[in-house]
Image (tube, rainbow, N blue to C red; front, side, top):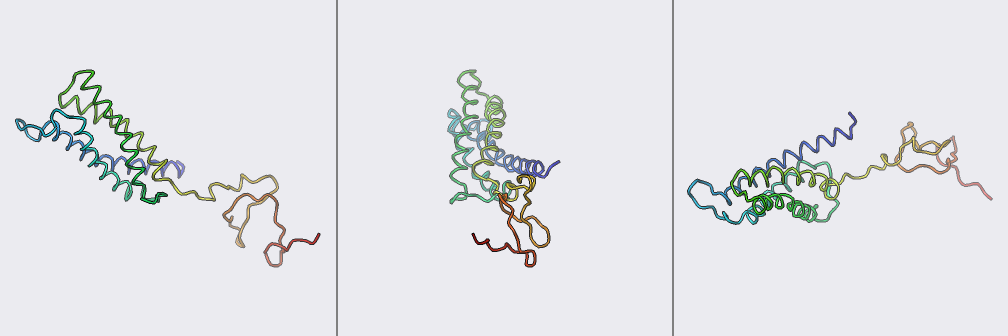
Length: 197
């Protein structure tokens, strides 16, 4: 398996671990707010599942941002001045619409308002849809991998007859393709001065 796929799988695993923790926090809060902590005790937001979902997932979002920044995408420095927080929150708010739509369809279209239906709609179907969208969007817009110039200019991408620039020990130097070979003064290993016209 290539190193790129290994990095992707490692990031996906860490992302799922952080997301799992954030989901457990949000799942617990959602169920407490909508269905109550104990049977017979009225729930705080029993007749308002959408605000309860938003509130619970906002707390989960804080857990997720901290875990993503320090663990899941720890090898990807943010290019944003605020550490990617604004983009992270925006992506979370937009992707939160997926589970909210699932919950709305379950409650308002199908008429299902029991705890199992609420959790399947919002925390299973909606979670999977939102998770896939967030993983792609976070990697693309919030926690981007820095560009390695060596990856952009591979030696085999040079035009025919051109060699990549190398140091004194024969190691390829970073930099772009050379459009024309640079004449060198072989006694010193440095580029020769330009010839007079």
